[in-house]
Length: 357
Image 1 (cartoon, rainbow, N blue to C red):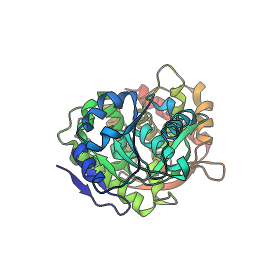
Image 2 (image 1 turned 90 degrees about the horizontal axis):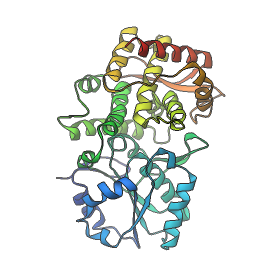
Image 3 (image 1 turned 135 degrees about the vertical axis):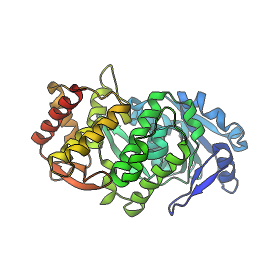
C-alpha cells in the first residue's frame, strides 16, 4: 500500500517503492530516464524496482559508495555519464541510495545543463528521515562537509521501509541519530517514545519514520532557505561534521549518524554551560545516546584540527562558530555564537563524561 504525506512543495510517498514509482511515472513525460546508484544499491536495492516497466529502458549510472566519494571528481563522473548518453533538459534522474546519492545526485541534476528533473528514493534510514526532505543538495569540498551546493526540490520522494532490510545494524543506528535529533529540537513526547525504541528491532518503522519526517517537514515549510528556524536542524552538526571530517581521514571513519550522535552530546554540554539545559537533562540525553552508540574518544591533540573544520562551517557568522543549542528537551535556540575556548571546555567535559562509563 502506498500513502502520501501532504507537502506543498512536492509529494512524499510512503510504501512499496515500485508501485509508487509506476504510479508517479505514469503521467510524466521525459526524453530519457536515468538511475543513479552506488555499488551497494545497484546490487541490493535496484532489484526491488525490477517490476517498474519504465526502468527497462533506463540508463543506470553507478558510482563508488561512501562519503569519501562525495566530491567534485565523482560529480564529473556523473555529468560525463549524462553527457555521453546525450541527456537533454527533459531527462529525468532517479537517485536510488542513501544521503550521499541523494545529495550528490540532486546536485548534479540541478546543475547539469542548468537543471534537469530528479526524484529521490532514499534507501537508508538516515536519508529517509533527513536528507531526502528539504531540498538541500551538495558535496564536500576540501574536507568540509556540504560546502558546495544548492537548494532545489525533487519531483517527489518515495520512502519504502523495505529498503532498510538491506542495511547493516550499524547503518540503521546511524539513521536513528537524526530521528533522535528531530525529537530533541521539536517534540519532547517523541523523544520519550524513541527512548523505548530498539533501532535494531523496531516494532513499526513506518510510524516512527513518518513522525520524524513530519517534524522536519514542518520546519522546512516554515523556513525553506534556512534564514531562521530551519537552523534548528543543525543541532549536533557543527561539532558532528567536524568529527565526521576528522575521522574520515583515519583508519576508523565514523558514519554520519555516529558523528552527529557525538556532536549532540557536545552541543548538549554547550547548552548546559549556557544555562539552557539542566544537568539532569544533559545526563538523560547523554545516557540515551550512549545506550545506542559507542561515542568516540577525542584527545586534546585533535582539538586544533576540529576547530579548523568548525571555522569553515557554512553556518558561521561574524567569524564566530555558530551552533543551534537545546533550550530544554523539545525546544531549540538558534544562532548561538560560541567562543573557541568554550568549545574546548565542552570537548574536555565530553571526554570526562564518556570516560566515566
